[in-house]
Length: 182
Image 1 (spheres, rainbow, N blue to C red):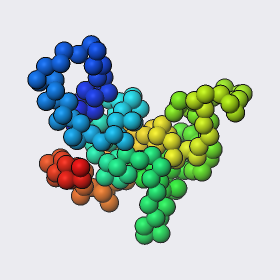
Image 2 (cartoon, rainbow, N blue to C red):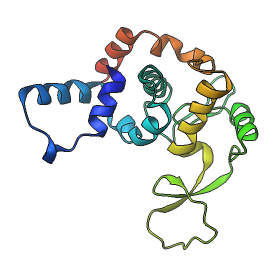
Image 3 (spheres, rainbow, N blue to C red):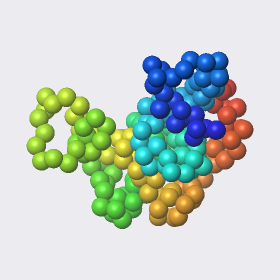
Image 4 (cartoon, rainbow, N blue to C red):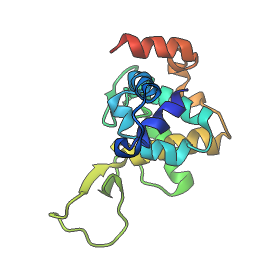
């Protein structure tokens, strides 16, 4: 249900939709469980986790529990410095980065419209460009979450987020928490 809601909200094109009672009810139900911050990341979440609704659902729940969908979220607990949507720590991030030849922790990356920009020249005044530390970009944070949970460990391994498992493991409890914060 959660994955279907994200896909429904992402593909929503009101001008082409028949506005029926069922449509309005589905919109209200989905809008109630997918917060605005996570909606902003729908395209990248679907790109990486969209082939498997169960994995997409788990990714949504983990992101909500870890950062509430805020890509610049930082948590300094227990001596760790967790950042981004999936709340990565530097040593895990760098391990994944080395394995796949991707940007390391605190490495600056050039982004254009929230995607990595790989051309050589970038104008400072070009629209849509930004420089960010890799772990704070939605693109790399979701990609690293995907690689860690789906590729390195094999499908459906969410071990690195076991500290928040109490929040995302049970869908009914998760839904109650989400609705309770609104």
